[in-house]
Image (cartoon, rainbow, N blue to C red; front, top):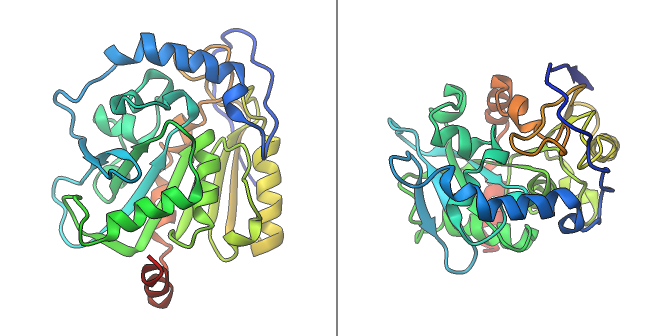
Length: 289
């Protein structure tokens, strides 16, 4: 396990941690607070004006924001980012919210993303109003890889990756079990629905704050233990921040913004690119669509 320490101010008392696994995240007080804030404050935080991100929609699954490297050539690796419950809804640009500071779409929107991300990945950030069912995410990825895809670039089918925060971190674990992705990077995830066996052979790098008051670090500790039992030490990494930041604007969600240090870790993007799916696996996955 990797341990990182970050200095951050203590702003208020933390919310009571939620349980892991099958807990219904939408019942947590932080998520109710985030929903109220998204209706009142997020609208003025950002808009499509002057954003480098573009919109596309799959009528059967999601509306999404897309980043394409400005000088892209050849098939690009895909990084699918799944947001947390605070950005849930039907107003797509709510993904670019203050509480989601540090996440790939927010940092790309404001031009703050690391070059290792901004210059080397096609980043796709869908929005959901009803969680991240793995089969729906799988259908969306198949749409992106199909001849009907509206993406402005070609995707390297062997190098598709999924990441996400909180509810989206759990969604990333579930999506990783579909066979669509070469590696998975959950941040402050709350566990996983379904058997861990679906992630057999899939590299996973987990990130979590030990001081997380929304989803306790034990969620990722348990996930790391289960994955190591399944895949051994080599395919599993776990970065545990001793003191992760609070999400801006949510002082009672102590330590839940491990997104800020996690997505600022340049090694993460090199690690993702070091993994690819065998051609035979890609062909099998595509043929079932």
